[in-house]
Image (cartoon, rainbow, N blue to C red; front, side, top):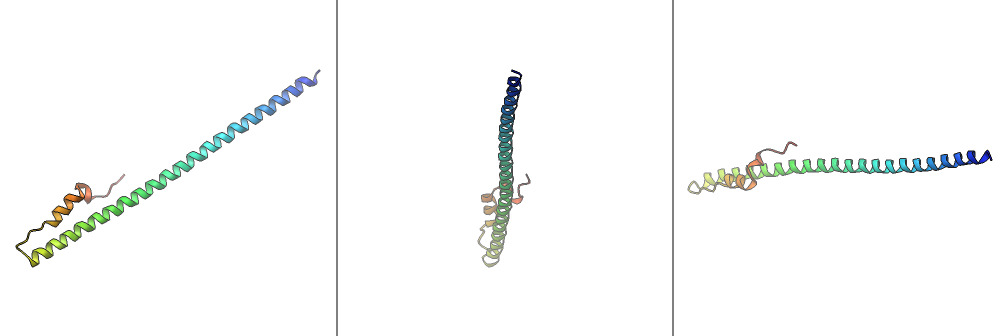
Length: 102
């Protein structure tokens, strides 16, 4: 009869070990999933920053080209007033002069 409490203790210990192992496994999976999501968010932020810088460069290029075209038009045809630089800066928006610093 003394064997029954010992067997019962072993069974309870095995059951608790199995459940604690399952619990730890579930926690590791969740942490791993969160790590992957954080890495993806960081990668997307990096890509977004690159795209913002590229957009800023394109906007500046358009403004420079509009200014050059304005100067050439004024030199060759002084009677014409195109104001392409003003039009381009208005179309690109007021914040086209500075890249986003986030």
